[in-house]
Image (spheres, helix red, strand yellow):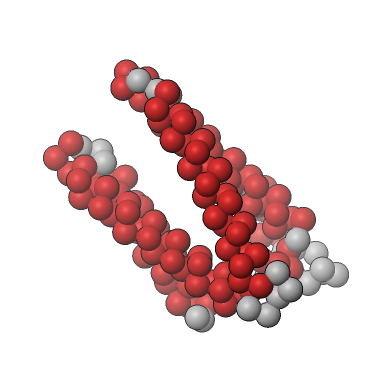
Length: 142
């Protein structure tokens, strides 16, 4: 899987997510919005899984180790999301949406910390070279 294909698939997934948000803004288009969201997430998950398989094939942890981290994160995040969704009443839906957005922000922070801690794993820099200024700015803003 080439980097161009990965980038294209993530771009398609991003467009699907944008269309999902647009569709969820009105009750008559909410079914289409949910469909776009599911398709975008399927593309993103399958692309990430394929990337893990390709990159982990030569590593010591192997494919199983990389997928175990992803599946573990999915179980933990799914449990937290399901618990919060069951606790929140329909009248408190804005609070649930705020909680979910906070979790997305927390995920971005964790990714930024991981990139700063191990930039070579993300292909940003060799361990002896400093992270480029543009990437540092992006991580800081994230």
